[in-house]
Image (cartoon, rainbow, N blue to C red; front, side):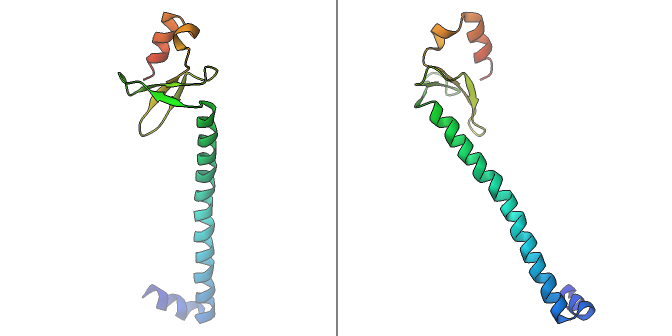
Amino acid sequence: MANDLVMRLLGVNAAAALAEAFQVLVGVWLAGIAAPLVLLAIGQRRALAQFDRIIGDAQDPRVARASNPRVGPAPLGTLRPRVILPSDFEAQFDARQQAMILAHR
């Protein structure tokens, strides 16, 4: 019904041009959504590579250890949030600092 009204008001050629413009705008909008998601995935992959291996803690699933001692502590994850600790966490931080870091679980 709305299509018929547009065709009558604008003519068949103008209605087709309007439909084509709409398709282009939808395509541009989708590309605008996809590009940041791709960049986010690339950045996430690069960040995870810095940890080398991430080993989960058997006692607390909200904590994991990075095999690389030079990275962390760092929060990681949206669906399953956890704190990634460096492999030498106990040697690198005193008891007070450890407690503050682990409070972010």
